[in-house]
Image (cartoon, rainbow, N blue to C red; front, side, top):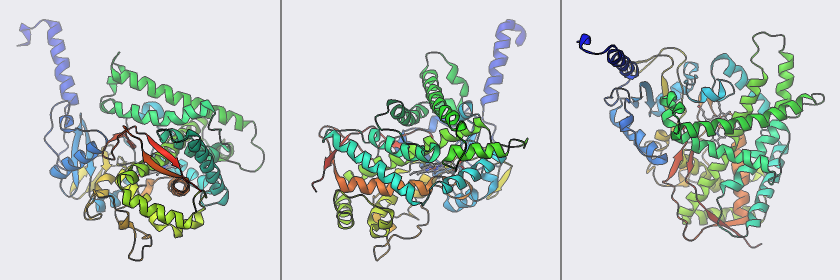
Length: 496
Ligand code: HEM
């Protein structure tokens, strides 16, 4: 047959056959079941929707084809094992073998350095250092509370200056939240009018949107090279943003290097001292590159998550006026209008804490705790090879009626006991994930959410602006964070 073709056509034909074979999913026999898949695209033709609609669709699809909450979807030729069953998620996330992160597009940017997109010994050592250093620099300490209170007061000033004009809250919340992680990491806060700082803080949100546009590049990395495609443009924009952020951290690191004497002041200082201690250890993972990437992760994870949770809270309150009224009444009783909250008031504001937790459950800010086993693993009779993408689906657990009856209903009461006290633990509630890689900033985020949110409620009434509609159903999922679509509201100053 080949003799009837010209040599060029024959070679092209063979290349084509090879490409199709290479990209066609080769299903290992013992992966969990899933929908039938097509050559090259796998199950991509079955994936639809954006943001919350996408999360719901993926959960339904994997529920329909899976077994015991385990289902394999093929994104192109890569297998992705979705795990919707809470008991299995707990087992996996507490097991060292599942603590790997899969290879992906972010490796091109982070080069498997930092805290988020790393694994193995480097991740273990760096995570241990980050946890103990964040604890030393304030988690649970009064100076951190004072710092967050100062930021809250600046935020209230900024919002008051807008004088009731419709605004997007993100632009105001982000610099305030960002300054807290800046103070811990670099020992300094930035003025909210500092243009370079504002730009960097806002880049974090922009990166979420760019990453959402690069979903296909995660699967087919070569797409980022196609000229004039939206992918190339988004990838170039993302890497340019990251480079600007790294340049900023590099300057701060260089500045710290010139002043290493004296008491430990902040994360960078502590890191540089550790680097110096380990300089004769050939296996040391403490390097300046690693520090830059860790800064990028702490700045990104520490900024976008907390400020976006607050924007979700505003949306849910405006959609649930009775709950908003009840919350405002509790806050007014404990914290007269115009006052700032200290953390010791937490026990007196159980409803507010329940509202924050219900916001976290419904918003599913980080819906998936994406992993990759570091060795071949067996689970429920299935065999998953090392390196396969595993997606513990936190969204599925938060929407599981077994743990949260009427899961689509915004109902803070589910976090309260009969006496109206906050339940110490609610099974199935995992906004910060659990186990070996649970969120490094969990305690910091909880402090921030409490102080910023109570300060906002004590100073402003949130109001819808005429002609500007929004809905908690609509969101953008940027492959890590699930954010509301752009929206604007009015912060009406309360009388006191
Ligand atoms: C409401 C706010 C936040 C939420 C909902 C949140 C949620 C999460 C989740 C679900 C993970 C994934 C864990 C996993 O893979 O199992 C994570 C990881 C992480 N978070 Fe947060 N986070 C928040 C705030 C913060 C803050 C303020 C910081 C900064 C200190 C931070 C730093 C990190 C880091 C560095 C990781 C990576 C940990 C690792 O891979 O070992 N997060 N977060």
